[in-house]
Image (cartoon, rainbow, N blue to C red; front, side):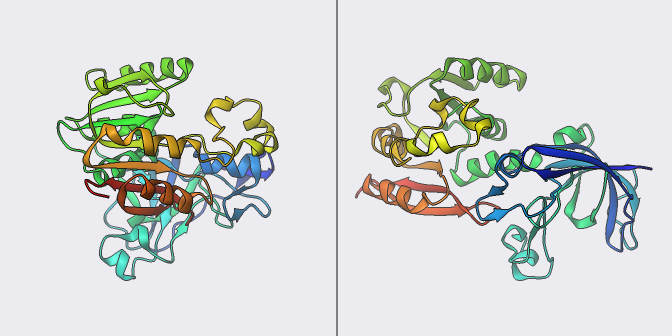
Length: 338
């Protein structure tokens, strides 16, 4: 067997190499990787050489969203067998701390996350991996679908955090995969995907059809900076990942972003916070009392967004860090009394 591995050897440079096929140790399995997703963090490393405080120093194998097939068992592995299709948990934890033992292993202080410098990723043919961090896929699920489980879980977690249930209405300001993931995981929910760009709306409509969600997901053209029409009704949850780059910083972005991404999706105004102000102020009336507003935020913006939401009558405001320990999501509950 040959093991081909893709290494990032410089900005925008990738090199394919043949490396030895590793042998699984006790408690590990050898997995033949069939699919690896491309995450936003992979793009940041590849284009910019960093993601937040994590900086590429030397060569780095990217990729942490993976699905594959068990090829070989290490000593002591009994829960998996050769031929099982699995999805890899990208964060390898200690298994012994109070968080791991209580089932909240995502909070493990000693987590080692794939493709996070200096830890290598899984963009290769074969990888040895802890068996208890490999999740067996059910019959009928492909390894391609398995590779999408980790990003799919983001939408699922948002639905749970937002307490979206059967019959609830949820609006996603943006037409990407998170809104579709919420809709697919809450079968009775009505989801509205708001998008300003007509081209993005066309892609959104295609994705709705491909995922058989036409009956419950409604795409509509809307400007998040404007007050919504009352005819939209009220929602239990609003989710938005708005443009948050300060206008003066756009010219200094990597050319792959500056010259190819629509500036409409980048420009957050003079300080990068225009959309957070507009949505918090103008869209709060579209929430039911006790409804929740969720924002993804840029690096260093969490405290400012928290203050903006608090000034608009949101309480119980919380900040969630991403897997790189960067404050990434700010959400709060609309209070009936301020």
